[in-house]
Length: 218
Image (cartoon, rainbow, N blue to C red; front, top):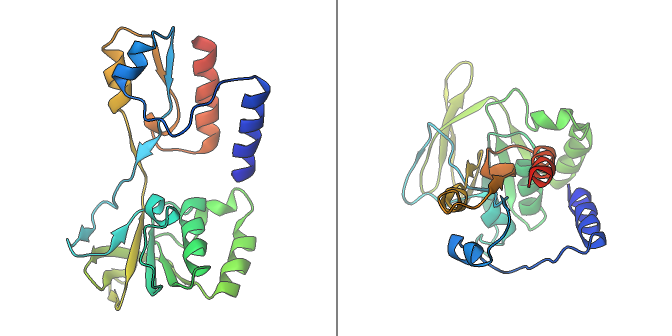
């Protein structure tokens, strides 16, 4: 995925497109620019795993917070609740393990990293995590997360399973479309299009295709 992002940046610079970073765009600011068209691609916002009771004192973070370093400085035991089975949960798991965390990744799927099979990455990933001491727990249905425990059950026999002495829980769930800017601009009379996760949470390839189509229409 990182290679795809690098390639896209190279193409943008070849076309001499002006890039502004570190700028928070509001509807008012965009309208003041009087553009001919606007393509909104602001992504999504973190979601929560449905059907799970998260106690107020539960040490829960999302993948964005982990990758931004918003985790305790002192490494401990981390449990990754993965509902996606794709590179997001896998990447977060490795990131924590490489920084000294004792990591266990749980999923209700038949095996961890289920969607890595499509990209032929599953074998290589299993080899890496085995070397890093990461624990896999498939067929685990998470029910609640407390201040120090993740409580769930086996997917098939429904026997309760407790993971105690947990210092950090990472909720890897589908993101929710960030639609605020798009709908604010729609009421302004501007020609507005959107692409990527602000439409629905999916993969990079979908965002690229939607962006391409929006660019042609604009």
